[in-house]
Image (cartoon, rainbow, N blue to C red; front, side):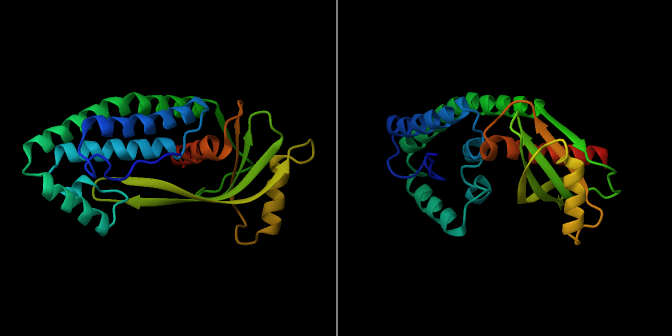
Length: 238
């Protein structure tokens, strides 16, 4: 996918028409992926840039707070040098504000499209526990079936808890294990027993069968949505 620089709207030539061209080229690429139901990393990248514009708009003199994600110390220093050159230039600042306003206006409908795709994919997912779920269902396996495809993808997962001063967040780490063709005898239950037999480090795992009734791009859409949906499912059930 085409990428925008982290500080694309203030680096180089501060020219509205030039930045408009860069932005529209980027959004055209994003929308091409969305048209094929390819969500990631396009949606997260788009939201990152939208939030950067929003933070910069609100905190023009607080650069470190304006760019809380993905920027290294060197990135911040580079932005600060650029900013210092234009901060006293009213014409440049007005141009930047015009660029930001235009970009946010154009990014918003693309983000809404991405969220609608996400919600649709999530609505087509079904999650079922396989066998008895342990009291602590935060480490185990899930089997993922993509629409009518008979191939199932098996992953080990572990849900983690992150805390800050305001809230708690759950994340998920996964690792791909294997695939299997689902048959009358090769069922999710049979696969669970085989996994327990072969992997002694998880004698009593939580195991889930995740299936979509429509086929989606696996890596770019189905798997990322399935991961987040599984976290929500387990968090509500636990």
